[in-house]
Length: 558
Image 1 (cartoon, rainbow, N blue to C red):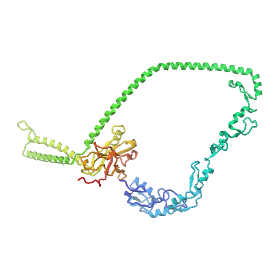
Image 2 (cartoon, rainbow, N blue to C red; image 1 turned 135 degrees about the vertical axis):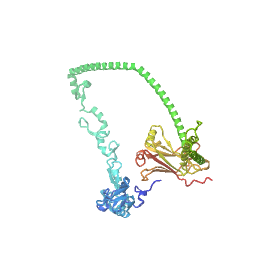
Image 3 (cartoon, rainbow, N blue to C red; image 1 turned 180 degrees about the horizontal axis):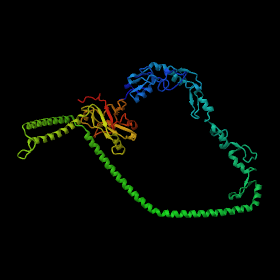
Image 4 (cartoon, one colour; image 1 turned 90 degrees about the horizontal axis):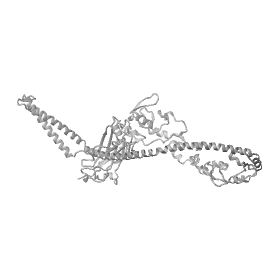
C-alpha cells in the first residue's frame, strides 16, 4: 500500500497534511525579503514553511532531506541548535500565506512589463501577459508575443525570401553569399576586364570564348610550357619556342620511361607476391572447411545441451513446486494425531524404564547373554525420538501455510542467487504456495533477480502465479481480487516499493488453471537494482518480498 505524501515527506512520520502550498519557482521579488522570511538551511525565501518547536521556520524540502538522513534534526538558526523529530514540526499555513503575498515582478519585466503583484497571482498574470516572450522557431530569438508574426514575416534572419534574379527561395542571412558565388542569373563583369558588364553568370564561359582579351594557352602546356598571351603573341611563341618545346618533349619522354621502369618493377614485385599468396589459398580453403565442420558440430552439441538443460530445469521446477506445496488440513490433523501417539509411547517407555531402574536392574547383559530390558527400551526411545522430530518438522511446515491471502517471502543469499540468474543457471525462483482462504485460490510468487523482459539486466521482476488448487471447481473464475506486491523496507522507515493491479478478465493468467499453474503476471520493472541493493532493502544478503490479496469480496462457496 503506497503512502500518501505532502511535498515528499511521508505522512505517516509527520502525522499531517496541508493543502495550502506556495507557488513553484523562484520569482524576482520587488524588495529583498526580510531575514525572518528566509530559510536558515538553503538561505532562499521560505518555500512551504515548516515551523519547529523553537518557532523558527524551514523549507519543507529541506526538512525532508534532513529527516531522510536521520530520525532527528537540529535547528540551523545561529544560537538555537534545538533538536527536533518528525513529531515536533508542522506546516505554518499563516507563514505560507505571508510568503505567497510578497510582491514580485513579472518574469517579462525585461521585455517591458511594468506589473508588480503578489507572488500567488504571478502564474495567472504571466499566462495572459501581453509582454510574454516567444522564441522564434527559425532564429531562436525571443520576441514579444504580439510582435512574433511581424518578426517571422519581416525581420527574422532565418526567413526565406525569393532571389530577384533566379527566383529561388534563399535564407535572408545567406542572400549575399548566394549573389556572390551561387546565383546562376546574377549579372557579373568580364573576368578579363574587357568592358563587358551585366553578363549572366551562367553565360561567362560563352563570353570568354569570344572575349578579345581572353589569353591563349600554348599547345605544349600539358608538357610543361607556361606561356599565355594573345593570339598574335601565341603565333610568335610557337615559331621562336621550337627548341624549348622539343626539350620539353624529350625530357618528358625520359621521365616517362623512368616512371615506366619503376612501375614495371613494382608490378613485378606485386605479381610475385600474388603468386605466393595464391599458393596458400588451397591450404586456407581446406582449413576453413575444417573449421566450418567443427563449428557446425559444436553448434549441434550446444543445441543438444540446451535441450537437456531445459528438460532438467523444468524437472527441477516441478519437483520444487511439489516439495514446496503444503498438505491439506486433513493431513495436518493426521500428523498431529501421529505425534500425540508417539508422545504417549515415549512417555509409557520412560515410565517402564523408570520402573526397571527402581527394581535394581542395570544396563548390560543378563546371565544368559541377552540384552536386558533397559537396553531394549533405550533403543526404542531413541527411534521414537527420531520419528517424533521428523513429524514435528513436517507439522511445523504444514502450520506455516497461510490462508489469509498474504505471502511473506524471505529470500536469502541474494548475491549468489542473482549471479546464478545472470549466468543463466537459475533465471527465476518460486515461493511457497499460499491461499486466499481455507478453501480459496491457491497462489505463489515468482521473482527474476536479474529481471525479465523490459526489466532484464536493470530491474528485479516480481510476478504472481495462479496455481491449480483443490477447490477450483467451487470458486468464481476468472480470478478478480486486487493484488498488492511489495519489496519491504528493512530500515523501519516504511519506504516500501509497492505496485497495485487489478487482474484483467481477458488475461489467461487469471482463468481457471488447466495445468499445474498459469502464466505469471506482474511487474517486469518492479525495483531498480541500484535502488534495491542499498541498506534500505538489502540487509545480511537478504530481501523480503510480500504479496497481499484483498480477500474481502470472495463470495461464500456454500
